[in-house]
Amino acid sequence: MPTANVNPTRMELTRLKRKLATARRGHKLLKDKRDELMRQFLGLVRENMELRRKVESGIRETNKGFALARSAMSDEAVRVAFMTPKQEVSLSISTKNIMSVEIPVYTPHTRTSNSNDIYSYGYAFTSGELDDAVKGLNDLLPVMLKLAESEKSCQLLSAEIERTRRRVNALEHILIPQMEEKIRFITMKLDENERSSQVRLMKVKDMMLENAHHYKERQENLYP
Image (tube, rainbow, N blue to C red; front, side, top):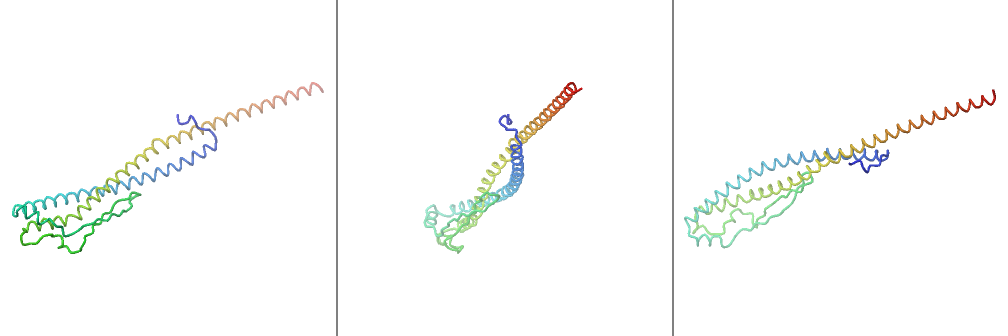
């Protein structure tokens, strides 16, 4: 029983009442945090689904372009075309805070800002389908990074939602009921002790009155 080791004193009762008030405030704050995390999470899930559709559609189109290019070019020509990359891409990672959760933000950087620097080959011996496929893949890169950012954010938010849900449930179903039970137990014990004290005082008063009455009777018998 949670009340087995409880010291039924007024000081302990005051301490438990303060602790219960703090727990209730914390429970409300955690519930508000959980609800806001859920709202943010659902928005990211919708964004994630839309980005995934765009990425999958874009990859299908670029794969078609590469397949058409390979049908119009020899394997050796395709290998030579991509032998020496012309553009370089680097990635910087920062974070933003959503309800105490650090969400990643991916920012790509290219060696040059010229959009035509993505082609590492000349146009004389390549097909137009290859150019379109390379351009489509280049345009798809920011969307793919946004998708990766969204998926990682969903993972972090879902983990935080689960932790917050566990804390809310622990407060709501374990800690707060235990403290309320202890407060009821101490209050009952204090009331019982107070009633016992009143009964003892009444008995002492009756004994004092009885002794006083007997003393008066003895005095009357001695001095009629």
